[in-house]
Image (cartoon, rainbow, N blue to C red; front, side, top):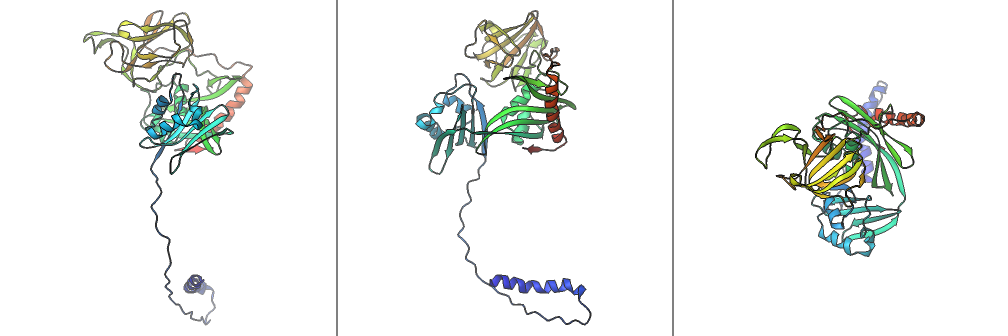
Amino acid sequence: MRHRVAAALIALPCFGVVAAFGIAPDTLVETVPVNNIVEELNLPALTPAADISPTFTREERIQRGDTLGSLLARLQIDDPEALQLLRNNKQAKALYQLVPGKTVRVTTTADGRLVNLRYLNGGSLLAVDRNGTGYTIKEDPARLEQRVLMISAQIRNSLFGATDAAGLPDPVATQIADIFSTDIDFHRDLRKGDRFSVVYEMFYHHGEPVKTGRVLSAEFINQGKTYQAVYFQYTDGQGGYYTLDGKNLRKQFLRSPLEFSRITSGFTNARFHPVLQTWRAHKGVDYGAPTGTRVKAAGDGVVEFSGRHGGYGNLIVLHHQSKFTTYYGHLSGFAKGLRKGKRVMQGDVIGYVGATGLATGPHLHYEFRVNDVSQNPSRIAMPSAPPITPGQKPEFEQNAKSYAQRLDLLRGTNLARLD
């Protein structure tokens, strides 16, 4: 109370000055006495600030043959205490049998210690959280809330660098690359200043993000040229990406069988072979990537060969339609169940990057042949898949209009995240 009185007494002269412009001449103004009051205050004891070390969130899709150890390694977890707990605690039994295709989302410290883990399996959500003395583990029924998020960002160095800076989950970045992979070569076409906008799903449990959903629409401006895509589900469980006017973005073949890598050797009629030490034609494209990087089928086809073959090392040959074949060489291994005669779909993982055969380091040797004649896969025109049918067009146009409005909202922003 004494503080309030002192503050009021000090403030009165100031109000008097402001009000003097409205006081009539010869009006007497009483002088108000001012007293300075000093009082000691008891402040609470200072405590150390809470740990605000940076954390990182990652999400990985479970692959066939995964163990808990291999999955946590891909999630960049380096935490023996957490690994032992998850292996031995019965409350974490959902992780004992990993289901391929499901996703695991984790938050870690910069040095790889586990902060939390979320595993959504069917109708249950496993939650692992670090506390002051260890970890708490619980499994509850999952009641998911779907939200639609929108982000716009600019390329500085790479797509993943831009998505990380914008807080975009890696699975969304991978989807963006897949959507535009037949028009944009993400190994060498990206330029500083390229922009992208994306509208995507995120699923929440009690307000916490636990699973990344599908990209619903996206726009990518590459070297001044604009590419747009919207997702359209034409039957239950089946859909694809189309331009705003209904053209199918899917080509019969991907430009590259790897999501992200670098070209270490291009298609040429004269190249000095680093192992054979002689000049010879190089009838494919070499993509440098770490051992174990996933290799995808460039198009729908049937496995014609899978095994060891001379300088190719571990080789897969796919036969597509009547005249197309693709070769994938120097692999470290093959996808589980891959064998001659097996049918694969475009984008299926068929093998893993390695350095078998005549190779000086881990990379993929990729060949594209037409009537058994090698062609440059970076130059050949890829035919498109069928467009929207007349019967599907009214529904598609209604969906596309909504998505186009969202992209228009994002266009021109420096960086936006909306939900």
